[in-house]
Length: 55
Image (cartoon, rainbow, N blue to C red; front, side, top):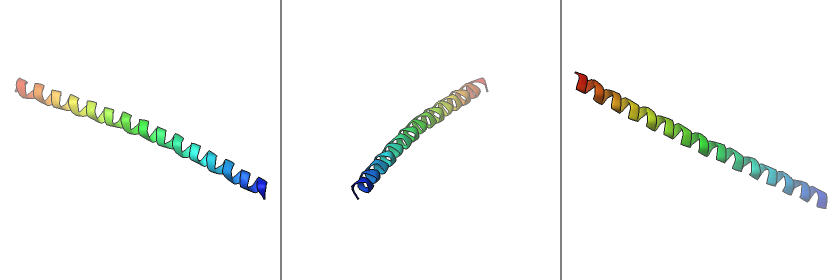
């Protein structure tokens, strides 16, 4: 019975580590995606301003 409890604790700890790792990856993915969309938006605004000045 004691080893069964230990096994369950180990499995729970591994699960928590996996969730934390996934959360970190999600966080970095969101940061990169946000940065990419911000850069794209900025480039589009600059492009439109330049085109308006040309016209």
